[in-house]
Image 1 (spheres, rainbow, N blue to C red):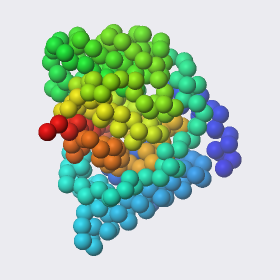
Image 2 (image 1 turned 90 degrees about the horizontal axis):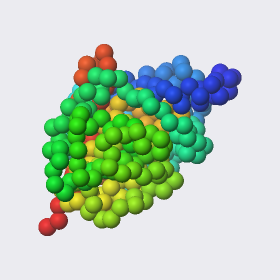
Image 3 (image 1 turned 60 degrees about the vertical axis):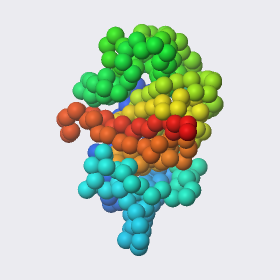
Image 4 (image 1 turned 90 degrees about the vertical axis):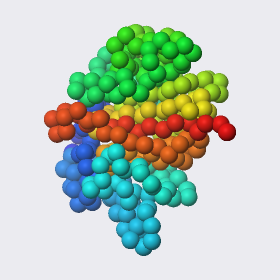
Length: 305
C-alpha cells in the first residue's frame, strides 16, 4: 500500500501522456494475473477485480464441461482471436456488474482530456495495419450519400490518405484535437461517459469507427444502443483496440483481463445492446511480439425486413 500511495500522484501525470501496455496477447491464467498485479503494486480493489475476472473466466469455461459452451469458453489460448466470437452461447443477462466499469481515476474525464495531446497511442506498424484494414472495409472514397461517425476521435482518424466522404463527423473530448483532424467535415465535443446519448437522428450513418477508446466507456450498453439507433440498416460499427491504454481511465474489467477477454467484452457490448448481427473479430496485428497488437471487433446493424 505504501508504494501505491507514493506513486498515485506521479502516475496520474505519467498516464496522462502515455498509453501503457496492460496485458499480454493471450488470455492470462489466474496465477499470472495475480502475480502481475502484485508486481506493479496496484491498489487492493484492482487486485481483487483481477481475482474476480480470472475466477469468472475459469468458472464459465468449466461449465462447458457440463453440457454446453459458456460465455468465455471460446476465449482460451488455443483459439485464435478470429475464432473467439464464433458460435458463442451468451448468458441470458448481461454478465458484468457496476464495479466492472469503475476506474482508478474517477475524476471528471473533461479534466483528463482538457489539454490536447497531438500524439498517437499505438506504434506506427499498428497504425498502418489499421489504415490498411479501413482501406478494405470502408465505403470507397467520395461515395455519394455516405456518412461516417468517428467516435472518440482526436486529431487523427487513421483513415486512408486522401479519404473523403460527404459527411465525416468526429466526436471527441478535446476541441483543439478535433479542429486539427483534416478528414472531418464537422465535429462535436461530448463526454460519452457523462452523456451517452448521441445527438443524431435515427439511421444517419453508414459506418461508425472507434479507435483504441472502447475500453474507456463506463456506460457501454447505452452507447452501443445509441450506435444501433443512428446506424442505417446494414451499417457497420468497427471497434479497434490494442493492449495499450491510459490505465487510470480504463474500466476495471478491461485492466483486469487479457486481450482475448477484451474481444469477448466488446462482443458482449454488441450482443446485449441489441439490433446488431452476431459480432465478429479479427486480429490485424502487424508483427506479433515486435509491435503493438491491433484487434478489431465489428458488427452490422440488422437490416429491416
